[in-house]
Length: 65
Image (spheres, helix red, strand yellow):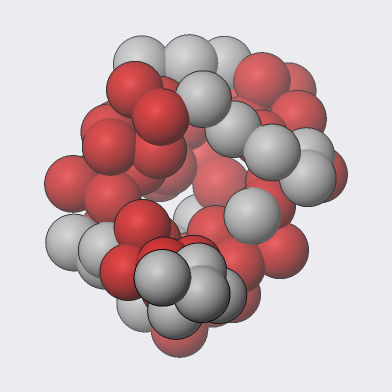
């Protein structure tokens, strides 16, 4: 998930400093998010709102329902 968040930041030409400010976190904590393989749903909701990108939709296509 972190890689996809970084890709979206890059696509929008947003910096990690900007992202940290929007998240209400210090930059090192945002770098941890970007390096992580997983994220809790509450945090992903916030990230999705800030970046105006539905990360849940990106992953739901992998569900075989």
